[in-house]
View: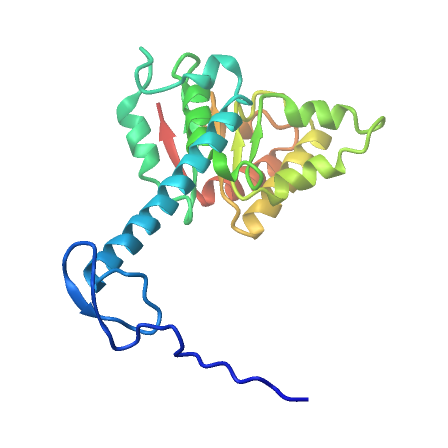
Length: 232
């Protein structure tokens, strides 16, 4: 069987002088697209920028779809809200979530939930890695423990990259329920998975709401040791 050799230089412009559309003459390389080096570089940059623009548009479109899952009252949440604490919000944004979490506390009406949803929206493209806990969500799963296995729910809380937890400590912490809270917080503490938490209570006040004070102390110590506490 005879193998036909292919002449790679056949029909090429290698070494020939050519004239670009811009009028610039240049010596052609093996792969030649009819452009001088300057125009070719510009073409490559234009192509790279078009890819970046497409990627940005794709991310923005995805973000718009995900924002629809935010409760309607918070979909338009921004710094223009009349009670929005803009100075504190900027302080919160300066916290490096790679190193510690945030504990935000203040009385009702201080826009704690609004801030938390805004932070969730800022990182919404990581929604599959993060988790948002509304008030009473853990309690409702704990109360159904005899009828439906809540294990997957607890694990999703433990494994989330960032746990957004609204109105923490609002429920009375009975001994058995406090053990569930401790389990989640201890797991996240052990693996340095940080939380962003809002509450109406100081961390020490939550301890007093626990039936088992020692368990409450251990829970809160693990919680705030890796968090920056910010009062609104």
